[in-house]
Length: 204
Image 1 (cartoon, rainbow, N blue to C red):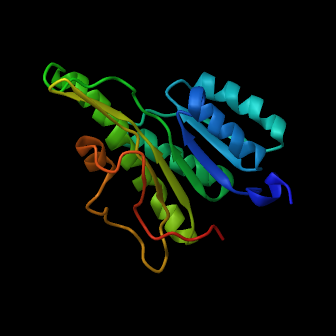
Image 2: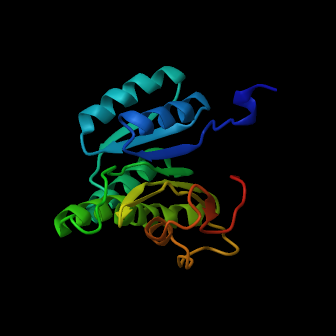
């Protein structure tokens, strides 16, 4: 059995934030190789369009959209456009993030607010936008990739939490659990580990 057969995503629809360059572009490539149709969104639509056209070589359909994850209306527009174009959303990869160092004592409020608006609230808003569609389908996968760096009293800690969140029609995770992406990042607990934010089940 081939890798493509094992991880076949033919007909699935994946939304990738920050999907035009870097890690997001690489993840989009992997999804396309497995047959998933793609919705690429980032602040610069022209970059998304270029990446989308390049990824069509894998025989998949693509949609390129401009999106500012700090703007709830922009996020809702992406989710609605994805469903209008493809009829469903099976996979969300929350890749859009700002990778700046955080100095807890010297960073300005505006500096920290920008990081949290993108890395935390942008991720939360995107999940909230796609969840109703996944709930209707009774299936879906959300991958949250995010990073926070902190420096406290000359002790450096890093946290790169990767979460999978799969809503279930039988037990939908409408409310976040106590251990959230933000809490793990700030506390430094469970660094590098995966944590479920909902009940796991396979795509149907």
